[in-house]
Length: 346
Length: 174
Length: 100
Picture 1 (cartoon, rainbow over the protein chains, first blue to last red):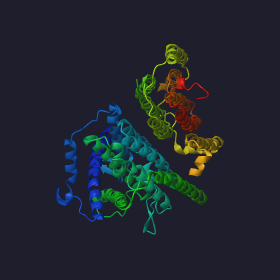
Picture 2: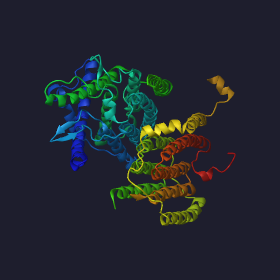
Picture 3: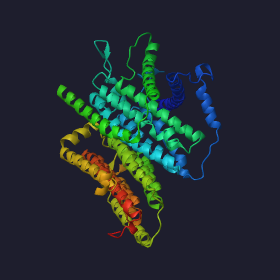
Picture 4: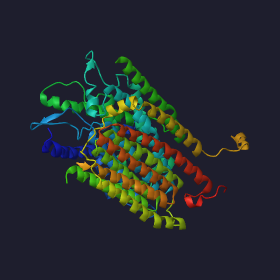
């Protein structure tokens, strides 16, 4: 039960491991993106630094540390420094409620592979995403330059608009699972029909919700086709124009960490979490769920990067019209239909 | 001094510090940020009382949407620092001591007659299922009325914030 | 175990700061934020009493207060933008003529 070890020591160890793994995952997501976009554009991507360019993120990190950290004189200092801190903090905190596998037994303790299982876990992630908008808005405002201000305003308006569709697309999943706790949502997707088709939420009728979630997630993380606020050809660099070296690296890290969080959430809510064929000796049985989770997250990230390399970007008014006039009614319709089906079934 | 009292006092102190900072700061963006910290620490106070769903909704809606709206408008209108004027000096001289006196009296009366008992940590767990049940059964009419209210507010905000209509000559230009 | 009156005193302090902000501040956006502060103080009162009397209606009423606050913030900020467009000032002392 709730002993000193399970309450304090295990979570602290899990936090250290999670932060380390997340930062490494961010670095290698950048590598994956550069390789995949390179191959889509018929070139190699990084190949020189280490085999297959695998040490490229390390080289980038060292470069960022040694770059000159220039603070322009016309910025509003307190918020200029606080904005990337807020962005990174919110991006790294969401990982604390995401479970990556079944509970494992170490030294006789039953340790869940999740830093904390809150029974409102999904709402916590939505809340942290909502607070993450401040990093962008304050960066744009405190930089005191017209490109940054326009980019910051556009980015925060876009993020706030697509948050609604994001939240509504998740309500269908909540109706099917009956709980906000991420462990219970994944547990409701266990088993399969005819031993072939798994009972993932995407097959239980939430396919429209999955696509709404996908589209809203692209807009939330400011990725193509919704990345007008930070497009180089439009706004120099949008809200992080005036940032250099480590502060820019923090925004960069925050964007990729948000991508990974969104991918993990999609895996948990729509693709069945860590459920997959389990076979072999007990040590393999403990590792396989984590491996399935990892594979699904990487697949989702690959779709993210694939879309980035393929589609052109929306104009800002097209973007806002799409979010409010198409995605939001579709999400509400999905919610109504799901609720009707569940109510008629029971 | 148990954990509940210690946590209540810490986050209560943050709330009060944020509220006083809102009054003291001259630039509205600093006031907005202190209000956000007040709302976040209030969410923790709600968690201490067991209202987990209300705490999450406070962060998502109040700190994550309403205050973003405020910050947005401050950025858009490029609000500058406040200046002192005659009226505001008089208000400061009379208002601050008056308010402090009034609230001290009320607080003293409340603490004196504190025979109303105490609440334990996590006193009333606000389970989302139970709240949803109550909301759609006992409180259905207020729920529907508030949804109409939001619709009216949306329409009002869109009409009020849109650019002024061009004259009929401008209509032909479009 | 925290006495209920502590929660009420905290709620009262927040409400008093909100009233003070409403009276002494001259920037209209800051006045609006003081109104939100007052509403937050009242929300804390609701939740504290709900926990004391073990009745969930207090927590439900917080939702209605939040909805009203959101609607009021949206419409009020739209009015502020409209006022700024015509008067070019955010200082309430200078918005004192019916006709420009």
